[in-house]
Length: 339
Image (tube, rainbow, N blue to C red):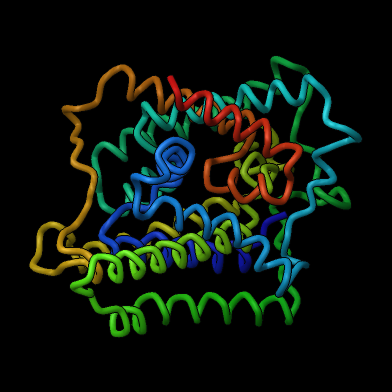
């Protein structure tokens, strides 16, 4: 169902987590590259490990505080995991691992961070993987004769708005407000670059972990860790009764504030520096660097997204909540990343 309040608050947390990492550590929040670094080069990265740790612990923190906001995956599984389901999840994970590696990013790095930076390369990548996901989600049911997107509860159109309870709204709005105030008002005043490398590294890790927790909460609040949420957006125009426009609010309230903030800050083009770094660590690739691998990678990642409805960030969080799915997905992601 369409969740305008949940998704708007979740999108603001996605903005806070991603732009906060840029503001303080000077780097882009790219979940797929961070996950690969954790798998293959954890000792060589300063920010990937705490960032992914924040994502991983976010559902545990929410379970302790407000478990009613956690997704229920019972509708996605019937009994034990079959070999067919295991192998298909493994294959989709491999497609995402390979596609995001050679395509140089996914929804977090290219869409949320890249579009807000007005990166031409990210515009091209998003213009490939987003339509690919939409077309795939519309074609697969016609080919297989089976629609993986069930009708919404009570036979209502999936675009029917549903709203949080008063208690849930109070909790989510408080978390969102506290995160924004902490990230953009308190931390710039409390974090001071230390001359000691070990102390500075601890502050960078703390900032990255906080960004990961916020990003995880944003995915959980918005419902994006539940694959049907994204697949129902891709139900347009195949079946409007199953269309859920929630994902559009991620674009509006996740990318919009980041675009305004980036244009005001102008990293790399102004005298301003990150709170905890001497310089901005931004992607240096240009349109001239785009080759057939980049295009094939973005296309492959888009195909996988349209099949499964899972992006790397939501995949990490879902793997914690749904381990029987998460094990083959993460294995496939790691295998695909090797090529």
